[in-house]
Image (tube, rainbow, N blue to C red; front, side, top):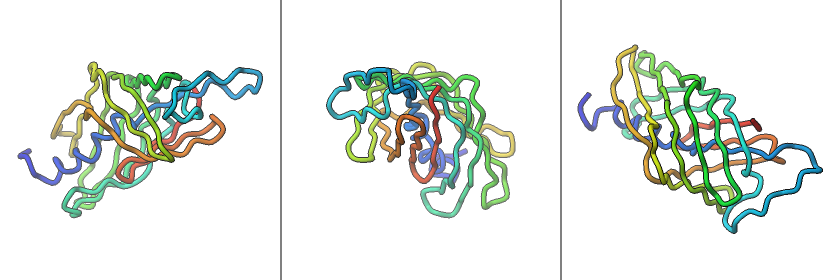
Length: 183
């Protein structure tokens, strides 16, 4: 695939989910009220601290020129740990791929593999993940079973999120929402 093609544009949008970021796999310390809340650094929402696992993705990714739309599902099985100091570890190994049929009729698959580390900060409902070690994390986008592009996480990933009582977390990047529950 040549640079600037529609699928390459889709990849630029999807690479942000190698977090998320957010992708971002965020973890809860547990739901028991007898556990103390860890001291969390300034600039980090305490609701995010803990261990999380993804239960799936939803939403539609659109190419940069707006001509290709791919509704996605799948994506369960990612694991994340968010520490009180803002440190994040995200593990994709063993997770389900994201899949969808594009507006062009082709079947697209996004496979995430490996793991990476970063530092998370929040403001309002926005989370910014700075990747500090891309480790062996990769994302491969395939069209009708043929790999089109493979990439590593972007150095900075910005998402919006909602976190409820350390029991559910939803992280949205470019219209794709990854849902998380405590691991």
